[in-house]
Amino acid sequence: MSDPYERIYQLVRQIPPGKVTTYGQLGAMCGIADPRVVGEAMNASHDVPWQRVINSRGEISIKGASGAHQRELLEAEGVEFDEGGRVDLVIYGWVPDAQWLQANGYAIPPALVKEKKARSYKGADTDSQPSLF
DNA sequence: CACCTGACTCTAT
DNA sequence: AATAGAGCCAGGT
Image 1: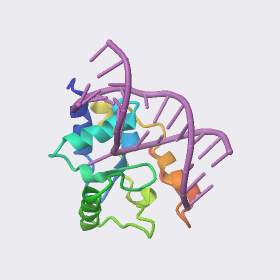
Image 2: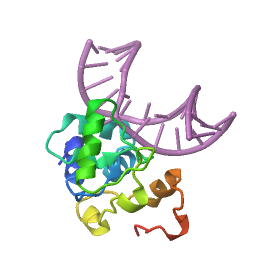
Image 3: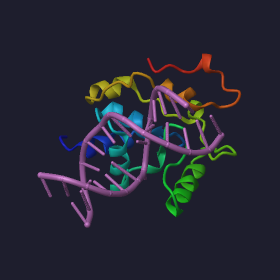
């Protein structure tokens, strides 16, 4: 699998319904430094659950109608948005299986949890976040 | 080949 | 909380 995009797609397919991850984390696991590239990969694909990829603040990054569509798809999977249109990554953030990642040649994200407190969720207890490792 | 654009993210105001 | 700037890199023009 030399095509970098294909590596991203393979990873995105691992995200279960009702869960989300971020461009940055996806890139980190694939060894792609620029999250923008991941965004572009999503933009180019039509056969992966692209709706489960959002930005590090838990918001949908797509502007326009497609963004609204993405939210609908996620809500249909049970993902909830707050008043600010944000998803609580602590609750809905996908925690990839470390063994699977390693077995498939992906890097282990140094801090999955960093996205967690990334941007405040009122009431979120940052001391009891699930750790990836 | 040069330049622009962006489904990004951090840090610093 | 909102805004700005830098870093980032593949694609399109």
